[in-house]
Length: 140
Length: 140
DNA sequence: AAAAGATCAAGAATGATTCTTATTTTTATT
DNA sequence: AATAAAAATAAGAATCATTCTTGATCTTTT
Ligand SMILES: [Mn+2]
Ligand SMILES: [Mn+2]
Ligand SMILES: [Zn+2]
Ligand SMILES: [Zn+2]
Image (cartoon, rainbow over all chains, first blue to last red; front, side, top):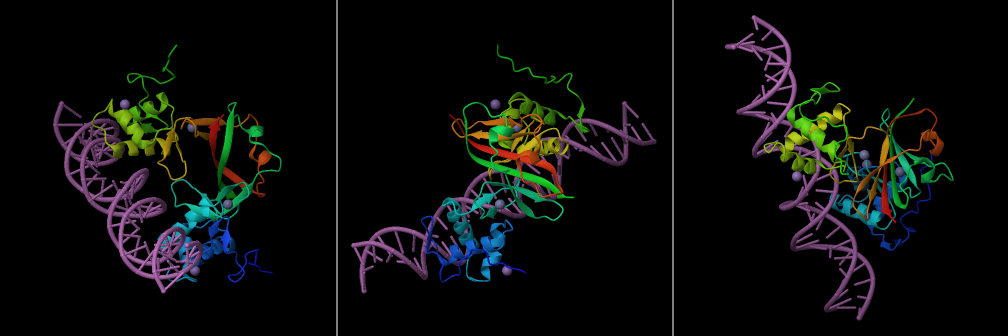
C-alpha cells in the first residue's frame, strides 16, 4: 500500500511556471524532492537527493533554488535554533514538532477556528503577519 | 519617575552563585545587563554594554557567560530566523513578537489556563518539553 | 541570428559561533 | 599561609552555514 504519488506532476506535464517563477530543471527537481519526501530537509539534504537526477547541480544552485521558491511563496523555511535551515512545502498555517525520540519533524496544525487572541495576551493594536511555532519533545 | 531598579541586587549583595553557577564578575555583569535592559540583545550588544563596566572583557567570554547562564536555566536564548541569537532573562513561559515597525521585540504571554491541546492538533502521546513561539508584525 | 536577460556552477568571502591554548583567578588541600 | 588542583578568562584561530562574485550557459525577446 505504499504510495508516494501525491499530486506531483511528472516532468512532462509539470507547469512551466509557479507563482510567476520559471520552473527550470533545477528548481523543478528541488521542488519535487521537497514534495515527495516531506521530511523538512536541509539544503545539503536536498542537494544530495537532487544529485541523483541532476548529477552536475551545485550546492549554490540548490540554495538559489530554495531561495527563489521561498521568495515566491512556493515553499517555506523552517528554523530550529541555530541548525541549518530546513524547507517545507506545506503552505497551510502550521507549526513544527521536533520529536526528539525519532529525530523526525512533524507538521502541527492549529485547531480550526482558533484565533491568536484566544490564547495569547496580545498588546492592543498588534497586527500579526507571520507566526512561527516550534515544539520540542517526544512521542511517549 | 524613572526607575531602573528592578529586583537586581547590586554588586555587594549579589548572590555568589545562582542555580549552582558561580557568579564571577563577568557573569554577574552579563546577567545584570540582561536584567536591566530587557531588549533581547545579541552577544555583541551585551559585549558592548558590559565593556563599560569591565573594559577588558572579551567577546568570547561574553559568549561563554551567556552559554553558562543558559545551561543553568538562568536566561534563555531566543532565535529569529538566522539572525544572531538573542538572550532573554524572562523565565516565564512566553513567546516573542518582533514589531517590524519599531524593531523592538516584545514578550508575549499565554492567556492563563490555556493548554497546548486547546489550540493545536497534537498527535496522541505527544510530550512537549519546550515551546518556541515567534510572531512578526507591527503595532498598528 | 543577434541581443538581452536569467540562471547556473564554482569557488571565494562573510559572519556568527565554537574551539584551542596560554594565562589568570578561584577553590581546595596541606 | 603556601601549594596544588580546578575553573574561568582573553585572544585569536577554526568552523560551518550561507551569501556573494564572476564567467559560462541557457532562454526569451527582438
Ligand atoms: Mn539520494
Ligand atoms: Mn554602552
Ligand atoms: Zn512543515
Ligand atoms: Zn523574552
